[in-house]
Image (cartoon, rainbow, N blue to C red; front, top):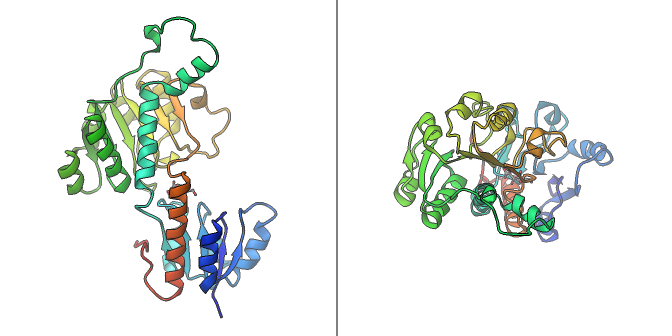
Length: 320
Ligand code: 8YV
């Protein structure tokens, strides 16, 4: 008998068919008030779970006594209570590497659009305000030859460093739990303390995963340490930053601007003050959202799922 798996995210038919070769697939394009009760029922004898963003904790696991593997279609796995999962002998997997270049492209986009005020000027042109020469008040700041501070030098951080070093002649500083020799050798990245990074960087780019240790990693004190001309970029998770402190830092002119792909609450609250700041560029958590990369992520997650259910060690097993 094929093991029963639940897919709770919209998936390409080719990938669904691949999974169906070795599993019985219960498919939900999305979970909402209508599908959730059916999903809960299906959990009772499911051995695999594939999707992204669903909170997998003791409460959910109590409903899934036969679960063997939770396969996340994302590199971040802050939605998974890893202690609860491992305690029950369940495997969990994620999708690292395949999204590094795409997320790094998004980050460079945020850096450029914040520094050169691209969305703001786009609106200015489209709303018919370009009637004469451009005055200084519309000038931006340079990106090339500036100092880029990367907090969290993993796969994505390294892909950002590569672009910044080779494409923009930037000087790279980084702070990480451990040294990244590859980034030091290839992109001239210099390891330094968090404090030094915050003091010296023109662009501060936050790339750490969300863990209990990184909640509010950047707060009031950190913004105070940054240059007044600094631009802050976050494409990790909203909760790695104290959002209120960010709002205050921007209000007070303690930093120059921010480029944000993530927020504490997503979708972001319509009355979040960040949305009315011209020096803040916002995106709806689209770091990895290209057709090609989302396909690769889903394929990787499906491979993890199937291999785990076939008794192998899945390629991207999360070891905690
Ligand atoms: C999306 C991400 O959250 O991989 C991650 O950690 O942040 C993103 O790619 C996710 O994959 C949405 O489905």
